[in-house]
Structure formats: C-alpha cells, structure tokens
Length: 137
Length: 137
Length: 137
Length: 137
View 1 (tube, rainbow over the protein chains, first blue to last red):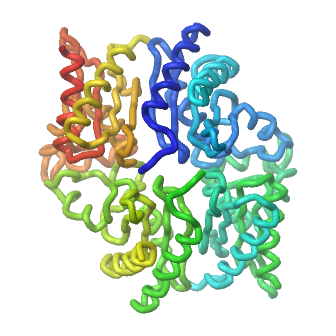
View 2 (cartoon, chains in turn green, yellow, orange, purple):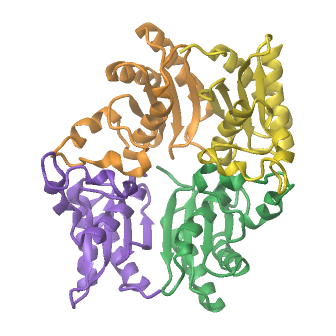
View 3 (cartoon, each protein chain N blue to C red):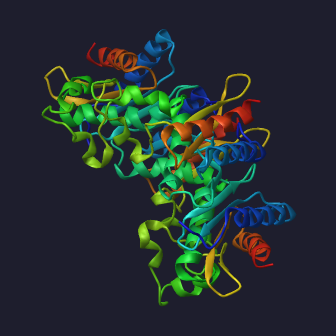
C-alpha cells in the first residue's frame, strides 16, 4: 500500500502537536490518518484523558471523510441544518466538533488528517493546526 | 430471490446518476437498493469523498424503509417533531437528510431506492432524482 | 482521494466477472475495493443469494488487508495453524475462504481487491480470477 | 490518570521495534498499551499491511488482559483445549496467536503490552520482543 503520507511525516506532525499541547498545558491524544482514514500514528500524552483515545482517531478520520476540518461541520449538523443527524451514521465513526484537521499535499490532493482530543474544542483545534503547519511547512 | 428491480435497471439508474453528477461537477457515491433494502449496485466515482460510501447506501435504504424520499424526513426529525431521535435507531442505518429517493413501479409498488452522497444535500438529491427519472421513464 | 484503481477499471473487472458467472451458471455478488479496502463498485446479479452481499465485499477487503488471495488463507487459519482464530478479530470484516483475489499494478503495487460470493468457493474464486485477468490484461 | 508506562517509554519501545522490523525486512504495525489496555502509542510503518492496524493493537491488549504473551495462548485455544472459543468473547478484541508480549516493571507489576503485526507470527513476536527488551533494559 502506498500512502499520501509517510510515517516520518506523521511523526513530525505529532512532534509539533505535542509541543503545542505542552504550550497549551493540556496533555492530548493525537492521531494521524492517511487519505483513506487508516491510522498511521497515535500517541496519548502522559496524564491525558481516556475519552480522547477514540475521539482523536475519529476526528482525523472525519476530516478525511468530508475533506474538511471538523469544526466546519459544526454549523452543518445543528437542528434544522443540512446534515442534522449525520453523526448517527457510519457506525459511530464521525465526530462533528472541532479538533480534526485535513492535510493536503502542495498539489491539493488529500494526504490525510490529524485529530486531537482531551482539551476544549478550541485547544484541540489549535494543537491539530500546529500539526498541519508542520506538514505543509 | 426475486427482486422488484433488476441489475440492468440498477445499472441504467447509476448511468443516469453519473451523467448528472458530471453535469453538477461533483463526483458522487451512488447506491441502488431493492425493495428489501439489499444492495443491488454501487459505484464510487473517481475523486469522490469517502463519507459517501456509507451514506449513499444508507440513504437508499432509508428511502425504502420509510417509503419516502429522505429529504421529506428532515422536518419530521427536528427537535420537537414526531420522529425526533429516530436516526439513533436501526443500528445507525438511517440517514435523515436529502439524497435518497424512492423508486416505484408503474403499478405503484415499491421497487427500491437510490442514494447519492458527496455533494451538498441539494446536489445529492438532484443526482438521485436523475436516477429515478431513468427508472420511471 | 486518489486511488490505485479507477471506477472504469473496476467496472471492467465487474464486466468480466459477470461474464464468467454466466458461464458458470451461478449469479454472483461481485465487489471491487481499492488499496485501502474502500468499496469502488458492487453488483448483485439477478437471482443471486443474499449472503453474498456482505461476504463479497469482505472477501475483497480481506485480500487487500493481507496482500494475498483469500483461498491462500485457508491453511493458515485451521486449528493448530499460525493464524487460527484470526476471523474473530477486525470486527468480523475478514473472510477466510476462497473468493477474494488481490489486484496488483504492473509495478507490483497493491491496487485493490475483487470479492465474489454466492457459488461454491471454487466457483467464487474462478469468477474473481476472471476479474483479475481483466485488470492485469 | 496515572499509567504504569510513560509515553516516552512507549516511544522507546516503538523505536526498538522499528529497528528490529527493518532488520527482519518486514514493515510492521506496532502498538503499545498500558496496564488497562488503553493505547499509548501506535505506528504503521510505510508499506505495511492494513490487517495489522487492528491486530497489532489487539495483540497488545490481549497480552495485558491475560498477563501473558499471546503466543502462549495458542495451545490453550485449540479444539478440545481449556479456552477453546475464547476469541469469540470480548467483542472480538482478543488475538490468540503470536505477536503480543507482556511488559512488566522491575517489581513484577504489569506495565502494559506490545503488539506487532504484518509479518509471520514468528517475525511479529521477534519484533515485539525487541520492544520488550528496550523496556526492561
């Protein structure tokens, strides 16, 4: 299997996320998936919360599935909005709040996703964003 | 097992949906199910989004389960409405927004459903509708 | 998302499988997945068996997951053999008998898998093999 | 949550496993879990097999659940043996062949588990064992 993202790239992303998580002061769960949503790398920082093990992975997956950051899904899934109820599909693999970001290669092709969980949704997004910056350079 | 829809009919539906998806400019996932909700045919167009693999099939299924287009479910599942929460039933197999349409034979009997996913819900419905027209003639 | 297999290639594979299934006299369920196991195309031939809708897809997935044809898994999963019990893992997504074949590109890279189900395991493999020949040329 | 294993220790284990996997010539999926079976770190090496994403994690979990290496479960789960059928329990989270090893602290307390998957079961065990040696020193 060839991937649009290498393990070395995924580890660099996680390194950047860990640094940002330390700056924020919140130990995080951090996941990187490839362009099909397969897990490439994951870490749970010391003293993080267990809820994030599952959710970090699903945030990364959701970003890849939708070709968008998960925080941009928030308005779309509210009562009355276009995708209301979508989180009940896909065997519970979707997360419809912030903390998952999409990775694109320089040519625009989807490379994968980063998911972060354990802090507030804003903290989670901020830490995931640091990972994306490490990837896109 | 006899079905109210043949594979040839399903393939004609998918052909019409593909043409409409190209006209819309959005590569789609397209599913056709029979009157029991069993999958008859499915395609994922090149460069579509992964989220639609699951959801296209469930939209088609939902149309058959309810004997209605999925977009007509939208007002019924909002907070305070009659079917609020229904998407949590049926092991997550229901989709309660647009993109699934019901197929009926000339005699009115349910023949199956078409589900489309990857664009906006309006695009999805438009592409599914093109498939229905190919079926009903 | 870029795939190592296009929908047009998948449809050619399915066409070849359908022809072989007719020659065998057994209507089949036929699935083609990409190199991550995502469904690219599926058909259920008229008068096939329902059991194959699920199993055809899982055979194709299993071939991709293991980088081998599913019939080659048979000796490995018997009591006392190296992978005995493996079918209980992976949330029931594995099929450990014949009918799933691996697709490789000319450069050797995994392109996807074909899964066929409804006949005997030998018939299933034969029909899947016809699909592989259509792909590799 | 305090764990009996730190992320730094898990990353050292994974580093040792990666080196051994390169020596073996088989890119692996490698997972480290804590003494509750929660995932601490995971990597999928480039060009590995997808089957191992799930199974590596479950091998690590199984070692912790049973307080033993997974290869020692093999004789116990055969037809007629004491734990025949156990892999069907625990929602499919158990793996009953080699590649999962138990980590113990110097005082004998369970610290976690390492799971490796993608090669032969002997290769998987060898690579996991290299991770354990990096932990126990």
